[in-house]
Image (cartoon, rainbow, N blue to C red):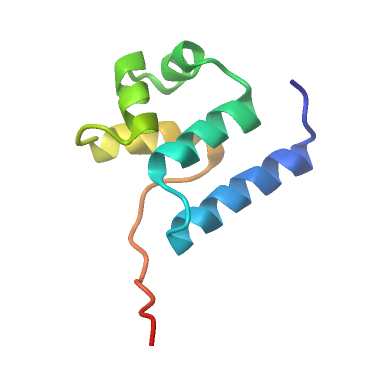
Length: 91
């Protein structure tokens, strides 16, 4: 798999926006970043992030109660981290 730096940046931006708008779940965001930006298998990506494969699988499937440390570990390679965003209320 080979995509350009600009395409990678666009995927990261799309994921960031989807998370901020609430249209993308955390697990799906991590899976998209892992597969579309890095092209790595779960075991390779988990090793890179210094988390267990089991933790990564749980994150991608939206299972368990992940720690902020684990979530930040999977977002860090993309220049992202968990944060607080203001909820937009529908009128």
